[in-house]
Image (cartoon, rainbow, N blue to C red):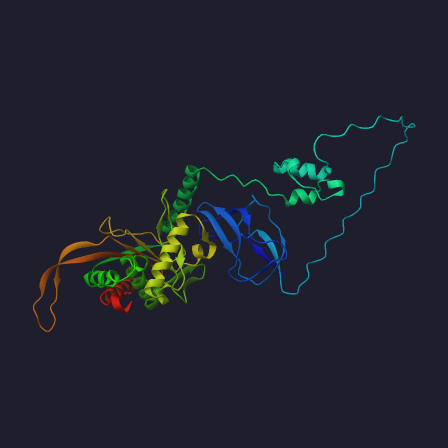
Amino acid sequence: MGVFQMPSLGADMEAGKLVEWLVKPGDAVHRGDIVAVVETQKGAIEVEIFEEGVVGSLDAELGTTLPVGAPMATILADGEAPPPAEAPVAEEPPPRPVEAAPIPAAPAPMSAGPAASPAARKLAVERGLDLSALAGSGPAGAITLRDVEGAAQPAPAKPAPADAMAEMRKAIAAAMQRSKREIPHFQLSQTVDVQKATDWLSARNATAAPTDRILLGALFMKAAALAAGKVREMNGHYGADGFAPAPQVNLGVAVALRGGGLIAPAIPEADTLPLPELMAAMKDLVARARAMRLRSSELTSGTITVSSLGEKGAEAMTGIIFPPQVALLAIGAPRLRPWIVTGGDGAPAQIEPRQVVTFTLSADHRVSDGRQANRFLAEVDALLQAPEAL
C-alpha cells in the first residue's frame, strides 16, 4: 500500500489547491496517468502518478489547499486488499429521565420539500445543493447521504484573471529572487552566422505543407539540446548534495503567456527527437501552457532551459536560471549584418550580408566555468552550420 502525496510542482511551490479528481476508488492506475488537477500560482496543473496499482481511497476533498507532501490518496498494489475499516465505537445513550405519562400530540405536519435524512440535509446545505433537484435512493424515494455525496458539486470559484496573474507574478518573483540569491551566475555570449540554417530551412519549407513547416526556433532548440548532451556541466540539477548531471536532455521552453508571466515546461529527451517531432512538441507545449493545462512532470523535469525572443525583438538578452537547473540559453532575434565570410579552397575572405543571432548562456559557477560554457556555445555554432544533420 502506498500513499499518493501532493507533489512539488516547482522550486517555489509550498501548497496547491485540489480542484478535480480524475480517478475514483477501484480505478487501476499506471505510471504517467493523470489522476488529479491542482491549482497553483502558475495555473491549473494536471498531476501524474508514478506508481502502479489500484486507487484504494481518495483522502483529500475537492477545494482543499494541501501543502507539498500532504496525503491525497491511498494506492493499493494489485491484489492487495484495503485495510479493514475500524468499527465505530458505540456510544451509550444518556440515562433517560423519568417523565410523566406523555400527552398524545397532534400528528406533525408534513415538512415542505423532498424527504431526506438529517445528515443528507446538513451536507446539502454545506455544498449549496438543492434537494429538490436530486433523485432519492432511500425508502419511498427519500434522499440519503450517499445521494448528496454523489451529486455534482458546484465548480470551485476560479480567481479573477487579474488576481491569477498577480499570483503568477508573485511565483515568478519568488523563483527568480531565489535564483539570483543562491546561484552564482556568469554569462558568455556568441554571435553565430545562421545564414546556412535559414537558407536550408527556406528550401525545406518551400515544398512542405503549411502544417509541416518548421520554424527557425526548432533548429535552435535542437542544437541547444544536442550541445547540452555533449557538455554535461550544463545539463542537470544542483541540490543539497551538489550537482547531479542528468542522464537525458529534458529541454525547458520558456513560454510567454498572453496575459503576462512566464512559464518553462520541458520537452523530454528533446535531443533524440527528429525536427518535425520536436516542432510538433513545441507547438503542443506552448498551446497547453497558454491554456493552463500542463502536466506536473513537464514543470519539474527540465534539465536546461532555452528562452527565445522569436524572429522579432531585441538583438540579445541575458536570462536567469530556473532552479534547480544550472544553465539557461537566451536567444536574441535574427539580424541581417555585414559579416566576414571565409572563402574555401584558398579564396579570399569577403564581406557579405548574413543573418546572425546572438546566443547568451547563463551558467552556474558552482558547476562550470568559462571553458565549459565556451564549449557549449561552440557546439551550438557548429551544429547550426550543418542544419541538414539536425
